[in-house]
Length: 92
Image (tube, rainbow, N blue to C red; front, side, top):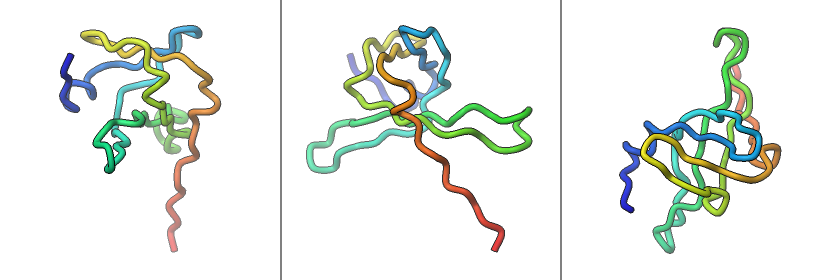
């Protein structure tokens, strides 16, 4: 099965065990030596109606992906280990 990145971006990522929606794929991590995708990056959920930015992003390792369907991507693993703090933008 061949997927383009533009096709992956339109698929919702869902955690199999908890049934939670993590969001949509925003970016990929690629190993430049082998040319393989190592992880999917998903932006965190919005805080209070999107006015106060977003929570931590998710970086989901490729080995945690269980199935890529026509409209969803099923993942399995520890959500807490996938969280990565967003970089804060300073005003100065």
